[in-house]
Image (cartoon, helix red, strand yellow):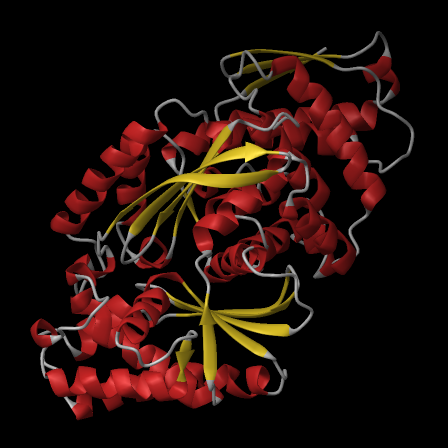
Length: 498
């Protein structure tokens, strides 16, 4: 991306309960939201026993995205960020739905991890509040997951994402619509069990304020306010009154509450039970409710990327320090890989700046696995990058990075590339070829610069040309390149050296 900020940016959140879109106009490094669209898709409700999204839920989701696509038609890729959350993380056919959704919407979709979702939620919430210095506990109850974040100012300090949400909880305990004291208490106990491993950590932190975000908390706040049970957020007493009203109703169809929309009624008991369990576990007396959350966090994160304040760069730098990666070697490899990329980016259709950025990160981290063992370090590195928490990275980005590191030396692992989506597979494979060549050229780990290498490509044919006599004077590197030619041949690439 360049420093030029688009006049209009947008964020789309494919949540487990609802799909949301916000459109904003930018000015002076900030934004003003000018349009919102939302649809209660209830994607998580379409998950059957086989953990697959059913056809009806897919139809609802794609129908919603058709409307979003019309609004986003005039925006380019760099102006729009689209993320999928818990249901797309869990569903066995999530990738199939993602491909259909991308085709319908016209923009790539990043499926993000639970902790990355938590980071973005905190980013949105913290920007929507006064810059207070107190330690905050932010709670976001979604359709399929619940995020709890401890943070100060704009910095999240501890983040957790738990696999419980209003849709899932309602499906388990109130699927037939019947509400009883026993079912409510069972749902609350389930919540407390999920919280048990992190209870002491959060309690001992000494947070000073609690802030709720997103649909469930907003809906509960709206009902409590409309009923006159609290004038300022959600209190313990007002939540207990709401819980008793929900129990007494006996059935979701009898939940006649001011401020409660018809479309949320079916998942409301599950949401109330989760929040009640959280209040009980942490001894919360009062919670403010923020109007900002994941969507706003996405917009701020997008602005950061545009202004080259990308949290992903910070993540890579932290990993370099944590695993004592040789910065000199990483830099040399990237300079050579970039020089090769610049020569063939157009004919190989990999001229996207995002791909160059991915190549830079892979160059920076290609030796990260050496912190575990030198033997098979490319495999160790791939495992680390596939499983580490990496703030700012989507699951797809992490996977591509892990594949690049896995494939940067030795045999070309074609099966690893088959785990990538069809839209990214071939381009990632070509980036891998450039990284491999750069690594071979710097195998001596010398500070001496490599000669200017000319590269030409024609489909899967690659020609490297060196200065006169250089190959003769550097026979060890020549042997390494000939070995690399054999490795690449198994992947369908023909490397010629002269």
